[in-house]
Length: 612
View 1 (tube, rainbow, N blue to C red):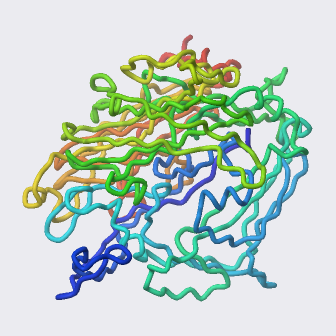
View 2: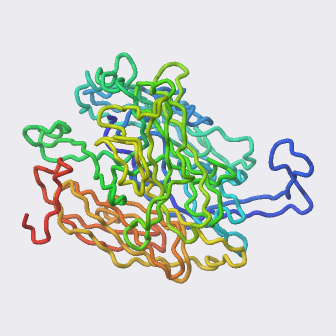
View 3: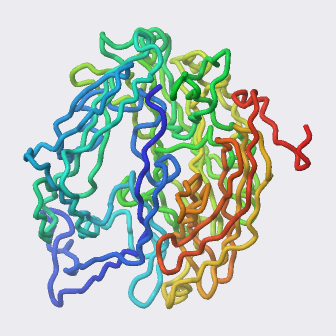
């Protein structure tokens, strides 16, 4: 529904060193106006990163990059600047925005710096230790001469003092702001156009930050330098289709950033309904089709991948970086963003039901489920009606956070994934109908797996968070030292492709085995590339590994969605861009063109001998 594609995001992995020193004989309040008995020992903290890895990957592939907007769905974006400020309460707008429309005009739309100079402006960012769940993730961590796990003796989610530690200072060279190329190839503007506005913003610096990093630039900000769109299909001058299609019923939804796939291929006659004739001389067409839906094989099911799923300590719910490990007995808070992707209000007296499930997986065999999924707390989370999408003055956001607590007791040494299902019931406990083709076919009964959910063809009511979570066994500090000393050396072995030849639009599963030699490892990121990463290859998959035991193994995998016809060489890399980088070729895939590539239900792999 919105412009094709999704942003390329530069991400980093690093070891973040925090040095904490006690101030002898001194105490201080950990909260405002505390009593004398509530004071705690005063410490001074210093910080700095090392072992930095840089990744250039599509934002859809990064599990811990979880903004509210969903590429492909205009109803997930804020409609107004006021709503953008609700999403980022400490927002510091850094640009003067220029609005435009999704029409047939070709232009470069700009968000220009608020500080104007004739030569352009420079920008400086004081980046703190990321304390936002939307943009960061943690692994196991070490301290002193011992090693701890999140929740063992240090509440990483709730240690607000860490959020005020500077991580780095970044300066951006002279520029006028950002520019967005509008291609002028949007379909039928009279029916589908809407207004959009790009913005650049950062954060206002909290009073609690006491260090003063020098920023000798025209534009300065704190935290992360970000861009975002507001998009408004609700305006009276928007295309007529929006109000026609999205006023009939509510649309209870989760955020599915990988649901739709864009492809540019040779033009066909007649032109398929989900394609647009583009390119020089009209020889190519842009097409959008649904990603693979494989509820019985989730790691290959882009249709069900969700974002807007957050894991934090129950002691500080919703705070700190995304947790990827815990110690058995830790109490966690799980949160999921639930939307109403519609102009229609939910019926009076209705309620939204959310179920959270945990599923153990086999780390060494393609993330296969072990046993049945477990309904967390054996109960639905029940929410009041979610407001519809609106650009009215003071209109609320059309999404809310559903929360539940998760007790990790009994999950020692388990690798878990989490999935969610949502729906709405009326005052009589009956299923509220949603937009045609969306929603569930019935209120869920007992579910053993995500595949048991009876959903409509385009349902966005069920999703899984494709990031594995590990639970360490309960242990004391003195016995938890298995990651002390030198970091592990990661070796790559047993690379595999599920097939070596496939029809365009099909899916190939690429996998490899990681081995942690000499020590255990946590927070390792594996990236899968179409083409050599040192020669312009493009990332098609990413997996972050929460934990590998010393001399243990972990199988990583990613679905390769066959796009351009021809031969493709696939690679895997870990510790990218560092002296410890490990790069290995997985194998070659031949993608054959075929006229039925748009029909997801008709896709078939080409046999190894090439015969049908």
